[in-house]
Image (cartoon, rainbow, N blue to C red):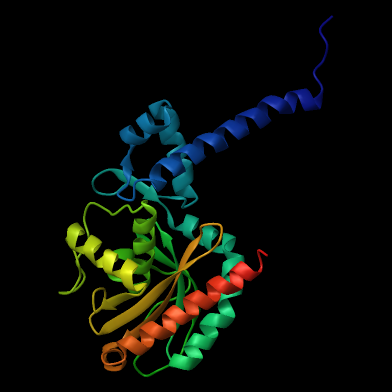
Length: 262
């Protein structure tokens, strides 16, 4: 006489299937993490070693949750905006440690101060202290800006270049006349950032808006950037002072974080 299966025995295959789906979804996300330009369905299928129909089904589910962006005009998929927000939450301790320092920096400079992290080839702003002016720079927590033409973005890209993990998109989009669109020129700029520890944006993303930024490195290898976006009327002539201020703040955040690992 056949033995009736218990509820636990019936649930085991379902649990195993659920774990397998999660593992497959994670492999797709990791494949896209290493390619900021995105990958086609065929490329993803080859990278993760799954059947095309299985890959397509998982991609559709990830798109629905905004963990993947829809296919672009060239048929490629990219990591979606929901991942950036999840990452921001995961970086809660960094934000907590940095907050009093960026508040003090905003008070000293009387400017808005951002805390950003790298999200693919963009900067995700995870915290901000606003200083209201008639003329001000526009950014917001949860917002994304291209890394190659922003001060915080270049500070973060320079840090990844120093680590040997720099990945630039195949095309650097032009936003203004001063946007760097040549990869070799950008890499030379990043080398200057490595040498000076400070990155500048001179109206490279938005006409009339400049910025200065410096990277923050934690002991566990996490990277963030402190940035000050400034209208041109308050930037030119104040670059050196702003650079000193942002670099001092970045180092103070690093020291604060390091003190909690002791």
